[in-house]
Image 1: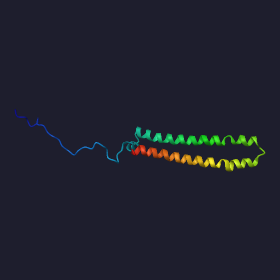
Image 2 (image 1 turned 90 degrees about the horizontal axis):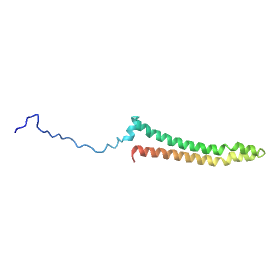
Image 3 (image 1 turned 30 degrees about the horizontal axis):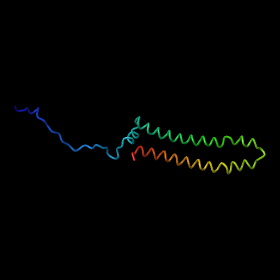
Image 4 (image 1 turned 90 degrees about the vertical axis):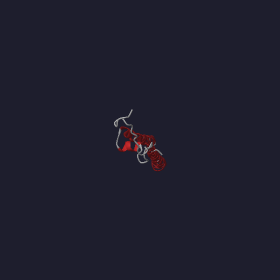
Amino acid sequence: MPQDAGERRVTVTGPPRRTRRAPGHYRPRTEIDEQTTLGHTYVRSLIRSQLRTALTVFAVLVLLVAPLPLVFAAAPEARRLTWVVLGFCLYAPFVLLARWYVRRAERNERDFVRLVEDR
């Protein structure tokens, strides 16, 4: 039984399809660029981690500085103690705290870039 021209089977061929995406087209980066909900979630996670770091530093600063007026009021005759505490005793913790903050913020950003670029 001969087949009609309309019923004949046709084989369609073409270039092989890629199973993986191109290296420059990774999903999280495009999600962020296109400002989708998922991209917004990625950016919000970075902002939250940076905010958590900043609030930690702020809490430590408050714990270091807030009791100082009470200490100075308890010993009003010790004027030199005031300058020693303000000039020398707080300087080192402030520097260490600032160094910790910068390192932590950079680590948060590195982790975010690693997440987005899938390294």
